[in-house]
Length: 79
Image: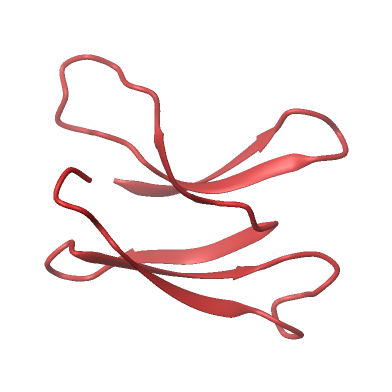
């Protein structure tokens, strides 16, 4: 499962990432960070074969209608 994760380590600098969570495992595992570094992420989406992931990102001071980027990443065989 792919999720957007917004974690606040301090009141000034929240961390936003796209993470993967293993659902079929019997043991609880920490989410695996797939993408990080920008201030905002939106609409993460896997292709039908689960080989690629696409998302939109942008950072301060820009808003999504000012400057956003569409990214596509390949998912390796080990995830």
